[in-house]
Image (cartoon, helix red, strand yellow):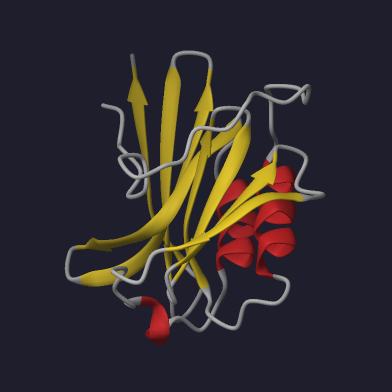
Length: 151
């Protein structure tokens, strides 16, 4: 089952870049860190799409970052976004690193979800036909659940 990113419906189409299509968890973390420069709100949504990362923040700012996470391609603002991340003690980049210790493959998505009544960073990895989702507690940073979905 493929989970849709929160911002997929409102994404702005950008031309494809020459960057490689594969990305590691460190590329995803680097993209979040690059996008976070100059933004006070903690990030809460990350999606790899159209040869770029889309990073959304609790304050409604959206930044499109190159796949290698070294430059911001575009910034836009959406004031209709809700702020659920104010409770987070760990950031999204740290959650991706922690999740990568429990799963392998390419990070395709990371966002804030509610699982069994708890807010978690949900990080999705793909490797071949296997999709792995890792839930990381936003307060403690502890991995709460790892699920595999084989296509």
